[in-house]
Image 1 (cartoon, rainbow, N blue to C red):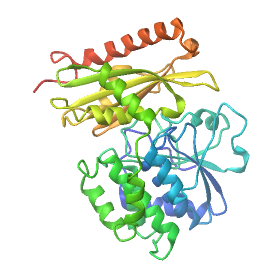
Image 2: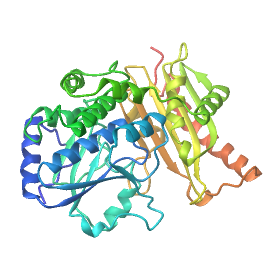
Image 3: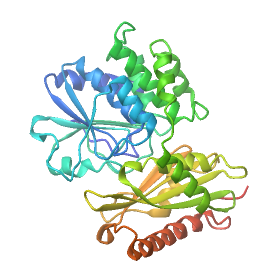
Length: 383
């Protein structure tokens, strides 16, 4: 193992990270890595994992990419289907997961483990953590061979693209269809996490300029043409009907959603933040897995207010669990939270129990959010 890196104190230098990663991969030739991304992976996570897999292949290191939730956003489904992106679902509640004994290490990309339910199973197996690459603010201490945390960068796909730009780890080939598709996925990842480059920084623009030499514009256009499903439109309608606005902040609870429709929540938040005189939107609901009888409160925040730090706002609102893990966090302009319901889990169709449970959680979430919207002693001011 290399020297542990501590999230929050580690300030990576890009050139040294690339050199360190190359050295480590050379030492791990013949190994197999388990790559974990967030439970509900977005284009940033999906493309970053694919880029890492291609880099590893160049060093005779095999990788398998897994997520523990579901692909429900139409663009994400289309991205995986049209590009052939090699990602698999692993439901930790079943016995259908991979054989962890065949891996020598695991990797976290676009997550530090707080948005990945698979982390508990993998940690219990004592599989060592090889690498963490993320653009979100530090969530916890991390003990790994190499940690590359850069909150100042808007997308993890930007960081992986910088690895490719160095041409030290892998040289992209325009005639290689897999390279072209991965470059297209990375471009989509950067685009989606920077709101169509409107919130991009210098590094993100540089990465996009590099990828412009390799990506397939027609493939990206086909991915972006994915339409919203009727269920997503229903959730957006619910958020409009239930929203409450105060001090230019809109908050909406949308009730119960099926596990497969979870990505409707961030799409509703994206829609609500476009309303006139609104700079911040929070949408949340109780997501239930009918097969496993599990429930969790899931919410998304979107903001156009430059002085609002979504990571600080969400951490302050919802705090940490008994193990010290934050219930949520964020990056520039966006954030999210997941709060397990635990003992009260259990969905009963059209029952008074469901209604009462929703009223309790809806009230509690609103109280935690509204106290921070107060202009006198909250985190959001009216200036």
